[in-house]
Length: 358
Image (cartoon, rainbow, N blue to C red):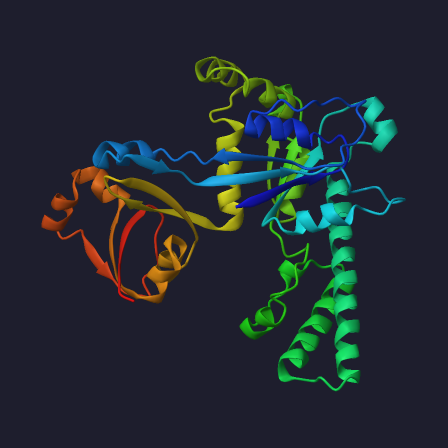
């Protein structure tokens, strides 16, 4: 999973990136804006892994990961043309974590505008919608050119109809992800990457003393339908450089139970509607990420395309069962070891072994 950290200049994106990835990239309000993205990979913590390692004693453990991309503050530069390469890289991410400044700073107010998280969020979404409108209009121009050349297939006509519907939606200042599209309409535009289809996690960057204080802007953002959380970026960046026990002491002082990495990972899973399932044995314990509501064949395809192509059955049980009873043998004896077909909806914590034949 790739998540783009984006927002206005000096909102604290790189500070939060440092906290998430334990990096030490220079941050200062007087530094010039960066012109390259920072990339960091974090391991998704799952307490179930410890218990599964006790049971299976695997030689290798493969955890789920999230790849965070910290992009320069290219939004809000109304008088400049954005870097097209960076804009393309942003679109290649699966979700956005929008960093909004929620801490007072008179100098930043004078340089980048007064702190106003709600207004900044609205401006960001406006810009995403405008970028999508440009993309739709360019594609419609290409379709018109195809028509003039005599190319008017059923697929192109469905695409045109879908794009005109999307354009009307965008012109009402509505994001594409709020538009209900039929399966054939989604298929028609699958090759286009829109900004406003991406799920958005809002992280309000506040001072450490305000982390547990009721925040009017945060509540307003949540009331607008966004998944949002307050993050004390500078404080958490300092914590990330401490050893685990020392960090926990400081976290307890201000009422934080989990690290920023664990909290943002959990929020990202909720944002994307993801669950985890496992494949387990003495050779390897592997954590796999899957969209909630996916079936066993889709899960098999996550492991290897051949498993989906030749799928026969999935041997299946849940973590809660093996955690309770301790061995697969005990699960079989108690009838908790199941064989599931293609339409089985995989549940969070399922442990699967795919039977297949090619």
